[in-house]
Image (cartoon, rainbow over all chains, first blue to last red; front, side, top):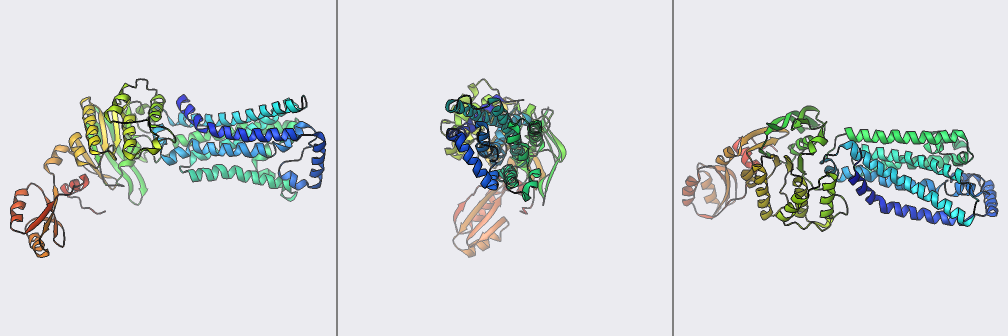
Length: 266
Length: 296
């Protein structure tokens, strides 16, 4: 079901990008964790009270007086949503649509490897990439926290938060991968593969910001990843990330089926 | 034994594009030339054989396997040169060949090395920077290195210089001796003449004709452009009993088939200053011979 040679090749292709995104996030993690100060957190909470809409737009609502709340607000409200999302979108487009668009898919299919295997292998690379990026940043988060503020971080809840963000990005990966499988040219693949997640994110921002726009939260999948409720240990929040994870699998399978059955003009 | 079989294949893209009710078979050990003008449907037919496209109507099989459903099985024993070379980014030629070998689970690289030597290929440069001819050589090595029983070659010599074209023809003839089954699309008369048993021509998505190469050779038509001293002489000459294609100023273009002596004696009567024989494309020869009117 998986072709190791293709897996290695594609992984090598995305390796540098993974490194770049990991580096950027490392930088942010270290700086933001270093900035944590329960007193500063209280000040920021004042900010939140003064400008609730603006802060909420960027997902900054939880009290920042605990380290976990602080990280959840300042890393998992914006940075850990947007950066892995960009990584996912770029990689997903490369996996299938770019090969079809350029014609290099010819060489992947002019070999005794069936289409399902090609698509599944490429999907595995994406899943591995997302997993490594989230796992790595989680470890950085834990290490940096322990070094700066020993025993301050509630690691169990932090891990749960990361499982949530992982499910969310698998789901985004599912959308982009499906789009990569459906469309034969890169432009359309990117338009949908990047457009849908980006639009969903913007809707989420609007829904966070205003009372009037609050109902918008029902039309964006970002709602399913609720960092605050997740670290509060609410079961609905856990069900929601399970839903995201299962939906991601459905999208990946759908992508493989679409690619297996479609006509290729290569 | 029938190795490649296309049976009633139809794919209608609308506006007369596509292939329609296409049927032919290629026997084990046969080299089959596949010709036709651009946009005639050659590549569409080949894409069906490769399992890239699903037939709307009809069926294609290779070695008894369905080209759409069992494509991966067929590919075990098939070598393919695509009409357009598109490789992966950033690889060198050698990296690409090694990747393809491993991807195919091919362990014996002796044939790969032989082919690299045969075509004087230096595969160590980046694919992106290679000339068209170099890329074509990489494509040839990739198609032949696993010693497949069936070969589908879409304009395999495009971009190659005459020396390399000859080496390619030698390669095909060796494969022919090994009783390989080969489908080859081409624009070069010499290439087809020197390799193929049978030739087919496809036009507007339909099979116009299939014939043996020998029949084609005896029917060979040549085209000449004769230049006269002045326009008047050209006009008088064109009144003779000959096949005229075109007259412009003092140039007359004629076609000749088995009656070259007559033409020579005719030309002696006129003030001829020059004579040249432009290459006739295979399609032109074919369409002339079979009386098909060029309506493109």
